[in-house]
Image (cartoon, rainbow, N blue to C red; front, side, top):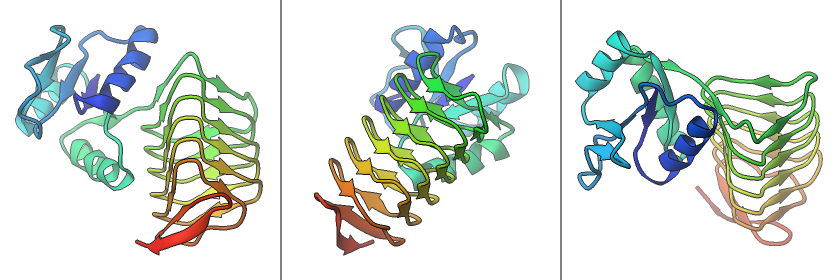
Length: 210
């Protein structure tokens, strides 16, 4: 497997992969940061070019996952590495709890330790559910949403594509978070959030348009 990125979030994805005992032929990819070593933790090679990535997909393992945050960047990387011949996969921690009824999880999701997903939940492509997040019944989380640690999303919510929810935010039941909007850390969202805005506070209010 190839993990895109070799810094902060990629290291968290590594821990999931390690705990899931899936580190055979594991490599990382970083063509941005000059300060990363050739091998992460002196063990995992870091590829530096698209040619190296393409050769890896053709000759070793087609699987990749995205170890970088930021919804828009994740979408760009998804398209780029599929075009290089990779196949996006989800990385789901064995220490998460996922209900057994009616759930759909799209390709390329990163579901971390302590996450709780109940039943009848639809999760799109490339979603991050970070540490200790909870997602209630009948909720829809669309493509490339990023949910930070310790977020509580109640039942019957909709989080539209490209949204970002900050650490410790609480989303009350039957709330819609609009496309590309940002919910600030610690916010309490009590009513629908339109597209392309930043909300923060208790209760959450629109701070600015994006």
